[in-house]
Image 1 (cartoon, rainbow, N blue to C red):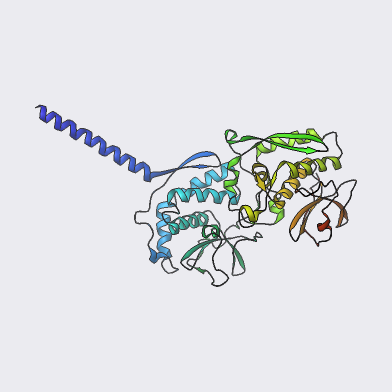
Image 2 (cartoon, rainbow, N blue to C red):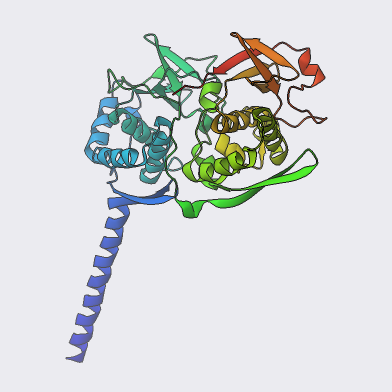
Length: 404
């Protein structure tokens, strides 16, 4: 009898262990958990049993891949849409969500082609026009977009522009100038939405993920400082953001908490100063409170920060300093401005009531040149480095405030 009880007990616990193992396996394959913009999410999903075979990697057989994707992952689209609408995501940040989810479902390290199929599928089923192409056994993901992009490959098909989304995964080194990437599928969406690289709103980020940062500088012999809040993870969501028009880069807004920690205190600090004095103060803040380093030394290539990224980063270059200066002047004074592009430098000029020093006449307005990037000598409002005064420049962006 004792032996029988022991056997029953062993079988019972073995049965419990089997159930537990099955439950764990089910949990692993039935859903994913991930962090996005500082918040935790979970989405139910399933794993494609056999994965993707190589014979699907061509235009003739890709229909099989589409069927697999629709069968196993179509239920994820409404979940993505809920998050997208709740956070009011720009197209760029929605793509970052798609990247996060795709990495959880099928990581790029495990199956890069499957991971890229996943991103393509979610973009297509979300109404965009993505395109998959191959070159030298590499898989490139393009998206239809009319935004001006300067540092990643562009493909023109039927007079429509497609921008490469995963060039960075190949270390920005694919011989596209020698060979033409060949499409392996036609778009699921004939009249899809354009992917817009402009970011006109920032999602609301969790307050507990912000950190305190003090920006301190010297202005006219006195030390000035501002205590602000920055979101360190912001850089993760712009890490592969391409080089775009200055009107896009300079107008990326601050997140709500960073804005409220800096702009009101800056306005209070400048309330008794003239606009000319206030613009000069902002110029010194951006120039002296933030570290400077060239992109070529930091990243080996050109990279442009959003204004908030510049505040959160330890180092940034002249374009980033100019972008932050432009953004702060716009938020505090909302004055007309132009962006000046020299062969190796970027400056901003501001339309002031009382122009000073070096000025630029553009479209009937006089703009005072401002230098928000560190230089060998201290430069005040309207002063410019001697070598720049002899160089040609181009007005690459003109900001005209909307009047209410």
